[in-house]
Image (cartoon, rainbow, N blue to C red):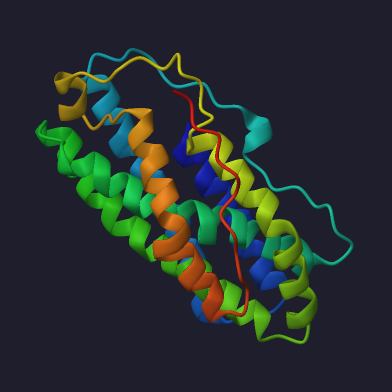
Length: 219
């Protein structure tokens, strides 16, 4: 379940923030986000059952944790802050807004109303945390890491949401849209607008310039 993964990752991110002595405001914001994700899990499961789903979703335990790859905790932390929050949650705001606008089934609409409201705060947490990290004594080193790794992270987003997604994904019916489902090409279009409308502007504010990844458009 995606929401459980988000809750677990946020919980561990918040622990790392505490371990490096981050601002209490950031720590409290992270704890609140972890709780939000549990609420989202409950709401999503209710929608799933209402739509005819049966049973509980499978949880891949290996995805419910962060991995350390750098010798310094701050270096690992900035990687996950950018990947999960600055990139992931920022585009999630637009993706959920797109899902919500065509959702008419009441239980699904209520769930998306709450999720979209929370996602805005989750996005803002990421950028506030990045700005705080860049202002620390490790700031220059952290900015260097982000500049070096950002092209790869953007390319990863492109693989998840962009034009290179498998063409075999079925079309979305009007009935499915009413439950909050959208066709994958809308995800790709939203992501591509993000490069200029959000990512370039927001990263520019913290001294990081970006280029959109190469796109391979399928016909």
